[in-house]
Length: 124
Image 1 (tube, rainbow, N blue to C red):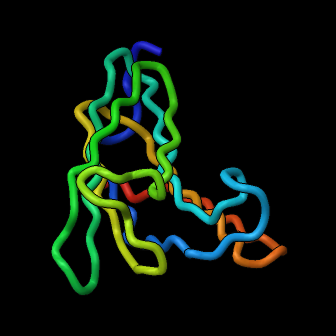
Image 2 (image 1 turned 90 degrees about the vertical axis):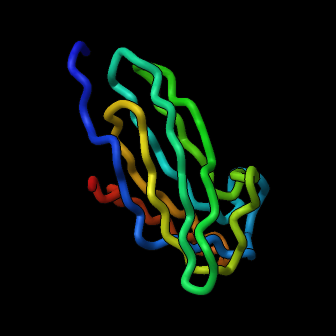
């Protein structure tokens, strides 16, 4: 693909990682993921900033998404500059150096009847 698709700024206004899980880890651990598609010819330098209702934002968390690749970033795995707290409402701004497409997914496995949610992030 010669033409980049997507946007360089995305928002996920709703985030929450449950602390409980049912089933084998890591596949069935309750989590949130940003699925990032970089269909362009340049690597994407992506940074996440996390916002809370009761404290200052945390970030940036930095990842690279190689050209013409996808990367699934579990919010549970973000640790630098600080882990994302469990059982806490948050929101996220995602900034990229090149256009990318971002989808948000949550697996809530607190019960044996798992819940999976997936939606497009908001292109700003």
